[in-house]
Image (cartoon, rainbow, N blue to C red):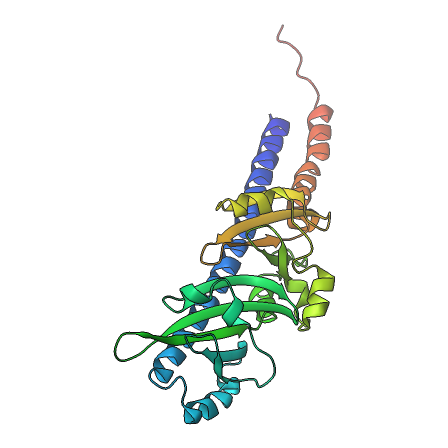
Length: 287
């Protein structure tokens, strides 16, 4: 009876610990997705604020001078541009380069509403474009504010969910709608677009079950081999505003180590317990 009870408790404890580990990784993935969503929403509001400020002054030389000094005010953008309705850049926070709004497929729509672009390869490296329309006091379109977000910021957003609950390093990463890798928490010090692409940005496709499920809008946890062929307990969640997905993937062994520890600790009392029972003299049957 004692043997059966101990085995039963061990099984139940193992189940509970496994479920707890799964819940934790799922929560980490959901929180990572929420962190990216919240941060992105703040950047949209910043760009909309710029659009309101420059209304009726898109072509003003004084406004161009003011915009040029705004770079440090908006550190999450590598560059912000004012573009008129013909696609001409009239002001920029960075004198080098042009984000190519005039020939972009999103330009016409951007004159009427905010647009969201995923991270894309460009001639200069990588761009993550977001836009906000400029509407004049007469209600007509005057152009668009175009911003290129700083991709490396994703590292800090993901790193806070990459500490691991069991002391093991947890990998947290973001993939796009096509399941292409965008950024990994392990790259937190990588800011150069070429280095990001070497690591895997827009080059490695995640074919794991977690990535497939998250791309379909699902959330949850699954034990799997990740895109690096590591055995992980992957939590996953969508980032709806961008069509992306977040994955939190601690190594499966450390994440579930408590299950094995629990099983071993429960097994040790069994041997002496069995020996004691076996050592008792059997009572003689009554005469």
